[in-house]
Image (cartoon, rainbow, N blue to C red; front, side):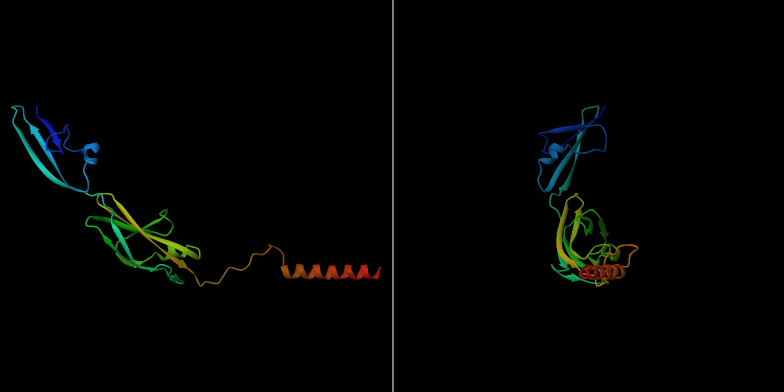
Length: 189
């Protein structure tokens, strides 16, 4: 019967395995910092002959770094959603996206510049908005950067609330007439 094992430290610590797919021991892997690591896989056949193959892998512990070129902090947007322009420092970039609500709703983007979704922007109330951009690398590390901007839509304001079923001017007029009649009646008495 053949036996299989691997080592991450030149043979000091070994880990047996029986399946050809799986995961490296998490405790052993955690001992390595960011950068290159060697994994050596061994096999021993029934006759006692051994062979090995070594592979170099890169352990990525550093999150992508995002620079927001546009929009600028404090910019006020009125009728249209903002344009964005970002740069990302990461050699193994997997995906990137933005959020206008702290990460509750994420909008995937495929370009480093473009426009924020018009429908997402229009759904926001007027006021300060935090635009947060995220990037994930192939190692699963997520970087983020935010900018505070302002939405100030020029749409007509909503009419003031009214009491349904009543004409406010008619109601005030009637109260005034009744009050005047009562005051005259008291003065005559």
